[in-house]
Amino acid sequence: ILEISHRSKDFVDVLEEARSLALEIASLDKNEYSCLFLQGGASMQFLMTAYNFLNENAGYINTGSWSTKAIKEAKLFGNVTEIASSSDKNFNYIPKEININDTYDYIHITSNNTIFGTQFNTFPNTNSPLIVDMSSDIFSREIDYSQFDLIYAGAQKNLGPAGATMVLIKNSLLEKVKRDVPSMLSYKIHIDKDSSFNTPPVFPIYCILLNLRLIKQEGLDNISEKNKIKANLIYDEIDRNKCFSGFSEVSDRSQMNATFNMNEGFDMELFNKICSNNNISGINGHRSVGGYRASIYNALPIESLNVLVDSMKEFELNQ
Image 1 (cartoon, one colour):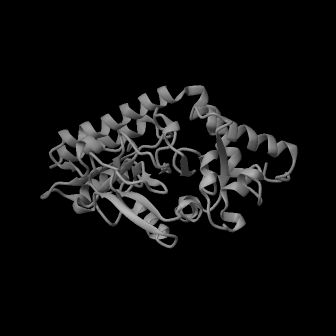
Image 2 (image 1 turned 120 degrees about the vertical axis):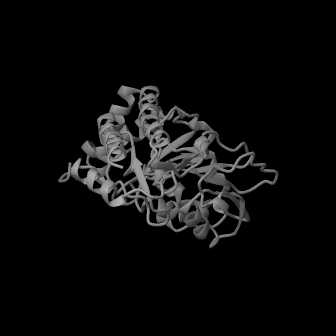
Image 3 (image 1 turned 180 degrees about the horizontal axis):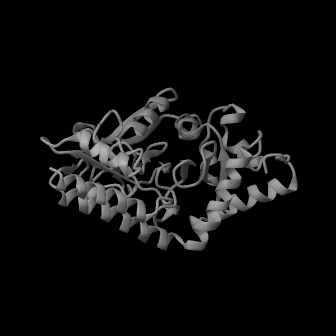
């Protein structure tokens, strides 16, 4: 796969199957939606969505670092209204009862917040197009994907290796593009060129295809149930263990990123040593919030969660 031409039938077949499977798994009509595999990560989509669709005013719900960065990029192209935010409590919750009275060019949300460990359980009702950054929880649960006009997701959490970004876009949204957009940033051009306007990231797309086949085979309902079991396992221990406390509000806890802190008076160095001895890596929280973060994406087996929970229990016994 690394040696063949991206224009060859072999790879075109890979690309078309991957695009078709993504729409099928999301239960989106291939006549209404298109699937693209682009580059630049979600960070490029912060810019690209606004470049294409922000003509006058867009509404953003700010729930963390990634939506904050999306807002920064969008302001280059028009007015941005922050219609709701959880910054007042360091993003440890999802804003509730969001009333969207005005008409916007679009509404933008981040469905899951990796740093702060929060996740939307229900999504805003709006007459404006709804755009969502789903980089960290795409295909991790059963939801109605048709409520969104554009979904984008960096591959490196639940889809495949870094280097590709998946976009699911409602074709009718293209009618809202009012300005000249450079070719590489134009959704229309990428759709017209079957996601091959430039050389696509061949190997990541191939890996994504293999994963999409597995997702289809297992079914989103089964994947969703497994992720609930994993999340409950770690959150139950956080709530039970006298040494730890959760960071995010219980009702908004993420199924992908369980964030928690060590309670005052306990030996953090000892817990870090226990984790290291049990081959647990990547458990430290983001530098902006500290504490700990267990990222429990689709590929993480429940056995790994059991190791972490056992380590937390071991630490408690040594206090």
